[in-house]
Image 1 (cartoon, rainbow, N blue to C red):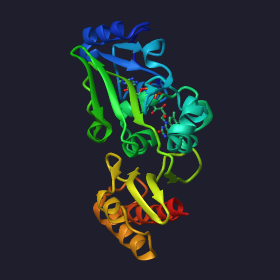
Image 2: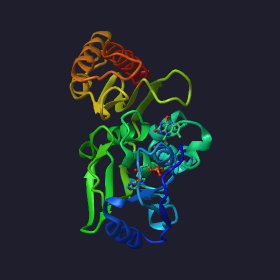
Image 3: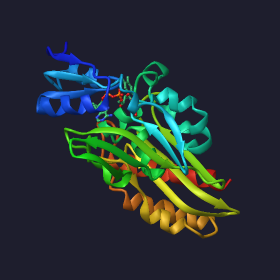
Length: 284
Ligand SMILES: Cc1cc2nc3c(=O)[nH]c(=O)nc-3n(C[C@H](O)[C@H](O)[C@H](O)COP(=O)(O)OP(=O)(O)OC[C@H]3O[C@@H](n4cnc5c(N)ncnc54)[C@H](O)[C@@H]3O)c2cc1C
């Protein structure tokens, strides 16, 4: 199939993009890297009458260090994250996760902001942003607002973004010197969307983990943190018994849903497999 006809405009400034979006109302749609949107246009799952291409807007570009926060612009590509020294040093979880996103050609075009705004529960960046306690910075006709990642992903492909708003950047607290991380996903082939995945960080002192954040993705309608499992592990020596308790807690607290090929039971089993591997990796 081919996309329905649409007008196309490529503003150079954020203010211009916001006024075009407000003017277009329900008929307008933003396009960044196009790696999700072009497929949905071609399948006619989306039929905007005007596409507003934000890929030329400098205010949405770049990775920078602002005090103890790493700021990642919405237009930063998956490849830029994968190759960034700042990311490797201050948010190593993102560097570990990036190669799991599709293939290099898609990563060269697809953007950080596009992935977060789309809110795919199987995507890597929403889960990582939750684990790293990111703050979403959003611009709209009513000014700028900031939303913590935990309030941003509302439901399947649904975020806290209003239709007239643009995600401009994300700020992430930089990793502490004793932060350890684990990122793993179970997929049929490398580059496929995960059947289930885990993005985890903690602070490690000896055999004790604290400030734990364990986020599962591709198991429910949004990425989900295993709050009870985190609480169980936090601040105690990590024994085999504690790992078993945390695994049981995560399997029962995450309200897994089936996808077209994997049952709820499979998803729940994989949550346990991932957390057990993750905890052993974090403490090693
Ligand atoms: C074959 C294939 C495999 C893929 N595999 C994976 C994978 O394994 N993991 C994964 O995470 N992704 C995967 N993707 C998706 C890819 O990562 C996309 O790049 C990403 O989901 C969207 O980024 P984009 O810049 O391309 O957004 P676009 O396609 O341009 O836009 C996506 C949506 O977000 C909106 N949007 C974009 N930017 C903004 C913004 N700044 N503010 C507000 N709204 C905005 C658009 O209006 C649109 O609704 C795959 C894509 C393909 C084609």
